[in-house]
Length: 176
Image (tube, rainbow, N blue to C red; front, side, top):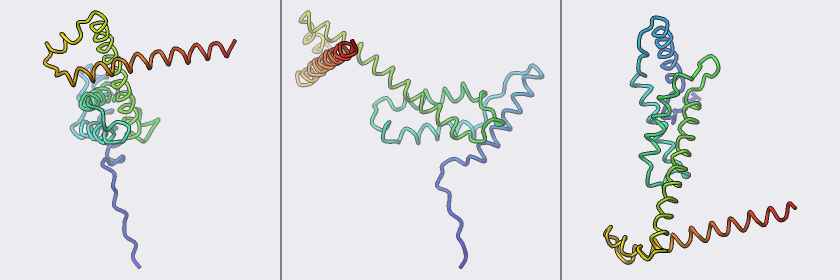
């Protein structure tokens, strides 16, 4: 019987990625020694950054966000910013290194979007208390059905905050 080679299902070859990173790092070191500008990453390295971000965005914990393109853009930007920090003498796994950078870039974008959403809901809630919400939503061209959804979300946000405050107060009370 002859043994068949396993076909690699990985979308990035870690060996090729490492070789390319070493070549690029050496060119950066040469440029620093000769006071030349730092060379940009190679097209292969940039493609690897993009592939990592695109494939991580397909994972179940990131797949349904409407701002996925922003997440991918942030991730590639962070990889480009921190690629000079990769040290081939410390790690032989650039795929893992840049996947971590991408993962945390995604988390930061999600947090930013949550904060923006909360600011938007607070603003809408302030309009609601003055009675201007329905007028404001009409100006935006939002139908009455959609306006009801906004109002429900605002109420849910307020209910969640109240519940969280009650939980914190209960925890503080139990600690005493």
